Image (tube, rainbow, N blue to C red; front, side, top):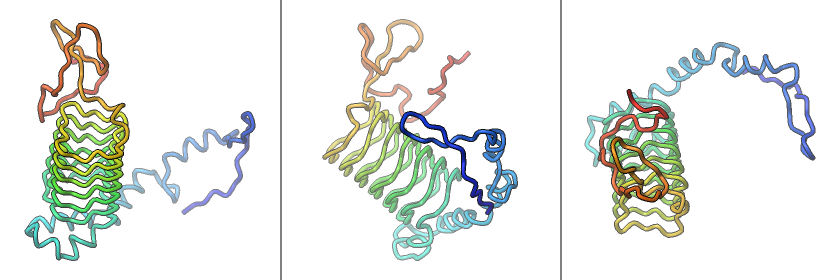
Length: 254
């Protein structure tokens, strides 16, 4: 690994000295796209993933043939996936029941309709992942980071999500029946149509910033608002149900 030990220049901003690039601006912009040995970053990431992360996916695929109850006593399911690097992998529809993915990194991973029931997901990183219609029944997500995940219509029944981050998470239609959500953070989460029957919400934060209802403008077309507007109708459930389509673009479809 190439280590740059040169000291940067500094600029005084008020009472604080902040580092500046100075004459190295173009150099530092180019370095953004280079790997540790100076090779193109995409090439380095491809080689690193092939050598360090492919075995995690192979291990998960191999465990598909094992009964979920047998995984509880299997060293592969309970030890070898701890801290796994599965960023941006396609795990769509796989059976991960009862697997131990403590501290695993699943950033940007596609977990659409993946079965994570009973999985140990303590302090796992699901930021920006797709958990569309995923099954997390009785999973332990304590301390996990689900920030900005797409978790529409996911099932969190009896899940343990203490101190879990759901910041800016898309949770339309998610079901938190009997879930333990103590100290969870829902700041700016979208919870349109989400249900919390018998959930423990003790010391949960951010629910005052979350979206539980949207307002529809009368007339032709569908114009929506996340804040109340006079004459607009409050709608408490996403009319698309568990299905999904392009909803976050700034332009209207032609």
